[in-house]
Image (cartoon, rainbow, N blue to C red; front, side):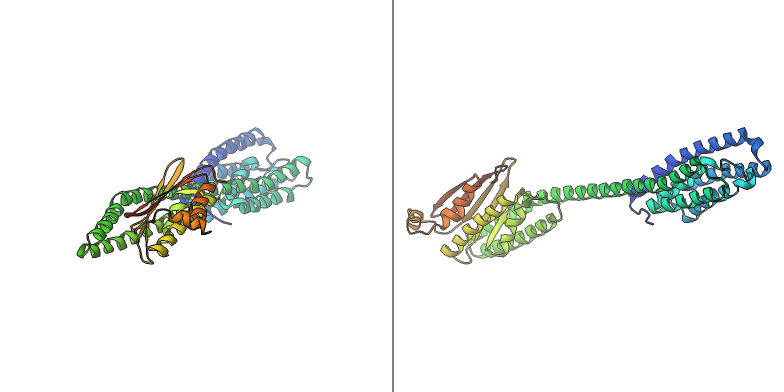
Length: 377
């Protein structure tokens, strides 16, 4: 038998016990009223009055005890079931051997539902079986209505217990989801602040330091290292953010290229979810661009990748500061059957319904890849 531990589950259980307190009062008034109306049928009226008084007192005590989790102990719940069982067993003594209705009547459902709420379906089943067995065992003649009441006790306990457990589990899962969403939102806010400030400044220092040379180049190199480390930290945190099934975080996939290439990847401060096929093809196209940089510029030549996400598209920029591509070189390579750029970059992007624009010159080479979202094959 499991009891809830999360604050949300405890809150649900508290509300259920408050509702049960109202039900206890109603069935108590019903039992007291019927007992007064049929007082002449009691074989031992004094003992009957003592039992009724015990029900009134215990209803007040158990209602007060169950309103707070710290007072809702196994001892209290055990005493609740024991008193209901004891009053059932006293029915022949108080009303005579030929009684037709038990002494506590519907009052025993308070103990049954207490066990169902607190101990889930297992507790409801155990309490229902015990109460039903005690009620039927002492009757000389078991009428159809008596069997029906016992049957309801046996099935009502597990059903209420199952529903109680389900509601508490849903409340716990909702609480966890809300907490995860709050953490993700705060992480995204911090990531945006870092991305819009620190990372951009470090990238600028790295670029300017390389252009100035000398001591500034060393400063730029250190700034680049810190930028990459900080970016990895942000992406590592983003890995805990949930991503919808069938999608990938394009920003995380591109950032992983920093481990294989001398490349600096700049992405938004939040995950960029795209269909898996789009993410796979775009990463492959970027890898093809970086392989060209490694082969034609140098194995340690720096490159930069910039990812921008919009509501309807993603834009990727892959840039290096090499000597550029000579005029007509791509056409010559295609004529020779070397279709690396055409197939690996333009072909992949075209299959996704996007465009790949190349800008090259003495300043270096830059690819602009634009892919619309929602049109993946």
